[in-house]
Amino acid sequence: MCGGVSEEKRERTVYSVQKAIDRHIELDDVTKLANHSCDPNTGIRDNDSGSYTWYALKPIHTGDEITWDYETTEYLVMSNALQQCLCGSKWCRGSVVGYKQRSVLLREKYGVYVADYLKEMEGEGEVEV
Image 1 (cartoon, helix red, strand yellow):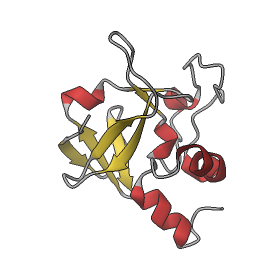
Image 2 (cartoon, rainbow, N blue to C red):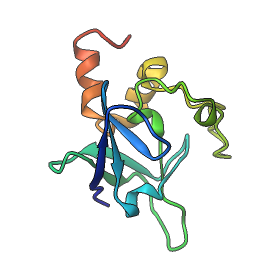
Image 3 (cartoon, one colour):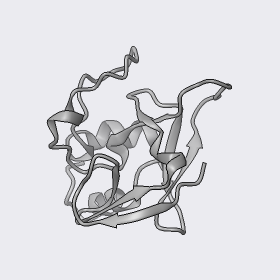
Image 4 (tube, rainbow, N blue to C red):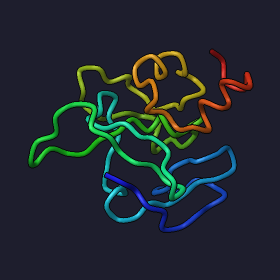
């Protein structure tokens, strides 16, 4: 599933996804409907349109909800509305705090399916490894 950008923002909104420390994008209607899970069925990778493309991490069947891990794009989640995780997965971490807090766990779990800007920050020592 290839996401497109509907609008670019400097600050986070309810529907935005982070692309850089000071850049958020609002996604097109299709990808805006994907929800968070600590055990998602998709992973994200940056694409050439300035958004993300979602890749299946496990089989997805008709009627399944499309999910991804918000911490693979968000550096630091400070909104109380997002922090408590209600995904219901048996692997639920209980909260959504951002890549900064869980970079080792997320890198090990998702490998290439993490936003490029977060991987670049790790390489520059801005995220604890």
